Each structure stands twice: as structure tokens, then as C-alpha cells.
Amino acid sequence: MSDKMMEALSEVKSLPIIMLETIVERIQEESLLILCLVCIFPFMQPIPIPGLSSVLGLIILLQGIGLIFNGKPLLTPRLKKIVIPPEKFEIIYKAAKKFSVFTSRISTFKHPVTTTRASQVICGISIVISAAFLSLPLPIPFSNFVPALSIFFICVGLLEDDLILILCGNGITLSVIWMAMFSYYLIQEQWRAWFI
Image (tube, rainbow, N blue to C red; front, side, top):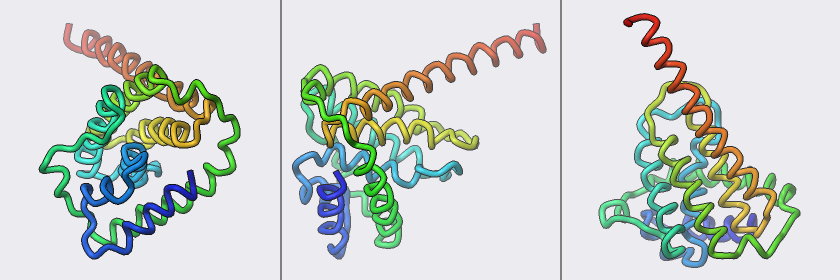
């Protein structure tokens, strides 16, 4: 993945204007997964970035839907025209470079089941769920990081055909769902204790 992604991002980086549409057009093959990775790199840190999670979360959510139905990138005409300033793309590029070294070391268990349609649908559902949580404007540490980590492992796993990484990503998604349900019931109990 490191070679594929870095080569694609280097090509995009040299362009005078970087739009989401340009990233999809230039990368073409596996652009859906690389677009998801580009969108989650700003969240691969414990401190949430205010105002960015909603827009990028929506873009990732649409890619999850695209993966479920046809395996192709899904962007609205308005999202296609979003321009990424060079300084922000530089941050994304540096994060990508850093994590590509990490992923090339951990990606070791290639398996043909990862290329099946069922695997794509399951991974697409996990990406949609994680992106929905990522989109929530919660000022809580790790509120963006945990769903971003799930998306990261799933996308890298699909790019590298690595079953272990895909299972890790889906496992994190399940833990996010469990945490959300636990939080809901905890808040509900506290609400009843205080007001009923």
C-alpha cells in the first residue's frame, strides 16, 4: 500500500489546485479507499479537529456506501469541487508518509477472502458506521481517533488484501457501537436518577 498510495499522492501533490474530484481522477484504481485514507489522516491523533470531522466524515460515509453498492467512489457535484489548500494537503501527505511505513510493516497476512464481494459489503457497512461516529461534533478526546483507526485498518486491509487488518478494523467498529450503546444506557439511567 505504501508504494501505491505515496505514488498517487505525490502525483496529486504536484498539481496547482487539488480538488477531491482531481484525487479520484488521478488515482482511479482504488481511489475510493485512498480517498477515505486521505480524509482520516487529520484524525489520526487524540485531539479532535473542530469543524473538519463533519465534512470529512460525510465524504468517508459516501465512500462506504459506494463500496457497499458498486465499489466506486461516490461524491456529490458539490463535494467534487472541494479544494484542499496546499498547506493542508502537505499535512495529509506527511501523515500518509508516516503511516505508510507503519502499514508496510504490519501488513503480512494476505488472504483471497478479502477480495470477495461479501467482504467489500461488510467493510463498507463498517466504514459507514465509523464515519457516522466520526462526523459527530463531540469535543471529547479520541472521539475522532477511534473511528478513524477503524477506517484506517479496513482501508489498508482492503488495499493490501490483509485479512488480519480487516478483522482489526471491523473489531474496532464493533467496539465503537458497544461504547455508543453503553453511553446511551448510562446517560438514560443518569437522566432517570436526576429527573424521575
